[in-house]
Picture 1 (tube, rainbow, N blue to C red):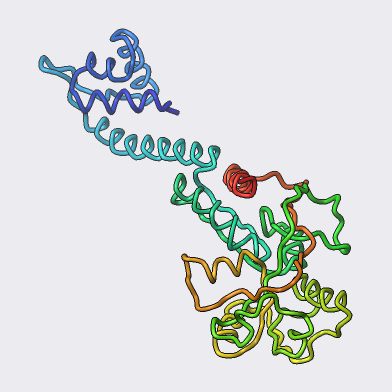
Picture 2: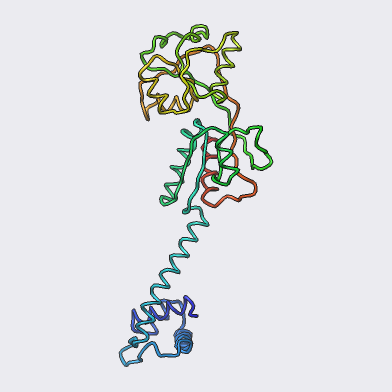
Length: 302
């Protein structure tokens, strides 16, 4: 049962051929190195080196020990490096989820920051409604989520950090007939074609509530789809209106993407109930998950 220090010493002796030089490299005095080598040979029951006038040369048994010892020491050093990276949050895997708004804004920025310091970290992101996110979280499939708390889930199971609410924006293609009319009255919007998320989705519900507040029935000409990609394609090829989070609208219309969409100017603000940062109380976060979570906090604080 050789120790790493013993393996390193015999490897250094083989490298330099000198006990004194090997002791210096290992941070030992020559008498201490001599005692360690003698103890190693006693444990193995055989001489590892031939003591010659010009230095030390490995015996046949010594060569065998050196071959295997080099591999073992390399693996031990690699293991130590891996453990160090894992405990410092620079390696490992993390799976998180979010509703669309914070996913395209804060989560992207936080992941990019983490990957700058930990390029080999395995990061998985799922974007889906809060109900699905909470189901995955309670099942232990995700480390943390950015989602809304729903009544069918016991909030006592979660560590909860308030984040913020979402602003709803009405997005259309750049050539839409209502572009330039500021502000557009809800009465003029009611008869338009719409593409929305499924019923019960927070952004759709906030939009329908806005029509009800104006004393208007909800739009009747509606295409239903939870897919953001399909929504973008449909908007580009029609005069439909899509209620989206302000973060998504900014991404699509801003300089990063520069798609040919624009936000309608409406006479009132529409906001969705706030979302939260949630993780399970019973499951401590890994160092990598904690690093990513802290980065999200920093992005939102800015």
